[in-house]
Length: 254
Ligand code: PGA
Image (cartoon, rainbow, N blue to C red; front, side, top):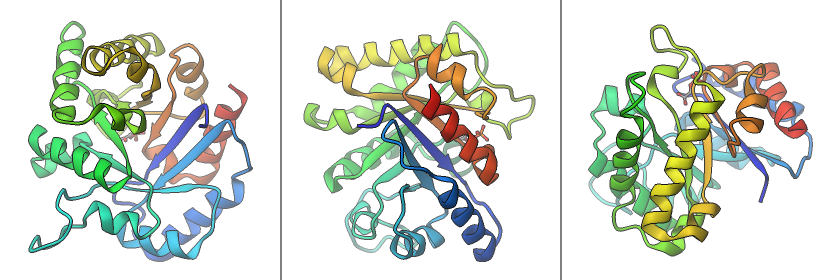
């Protein structure tokens, strides 16, 4: 298992197929084999399947969303099994933008996490407080995590990736700024404590906790080293190929 995981979340970007292919190829060109760092690109579904089939690559492919049923009358949705059979290995679940703009609830997130595990995909579960409030962080994050994991069996937990992503730190939020490595470190300890309470110490140690929110090549090292994070979820900066490549290189040097 790679020591660090750097995950690109392109969100609903870029605007055209041409631009997306250009960005993907530029990123792919800059990737060097490095066992220490795993890279996952989560691009819009419309191109994800195409690229994952077309381009043999050093990077893994992730989706930004999924539905919880296997097949059926669910217009517009895509199942975990469909993603799996198309070469996708990871899925972002519970991103704050889906909660804010699409009304995704804890219950839906929980169903998605369970379905993704059944299909053998790795969930990148996003949790984080909405306001920069300080004291309430552990309880908010703990609640989100517990609800997301309700009914998930212990043997699945080692494939879980938890992205601690304070919503106020996401670069597109008004007044956003990255969290401190100290704070992220504390949140990660708390996340492991919740998992230890639910599944035991071994499971808590095995889970990868990564940080997201205004990650750039300038702050990657502090989050990985001082914050002891297992990687990063990168939004805005992943749309600039050279910046994203630099983030991966920085991780390789940590
Ligand atoms: P950001 O986004 O890196 O642009 O802050 C991160 C995310 O929303 O996943």
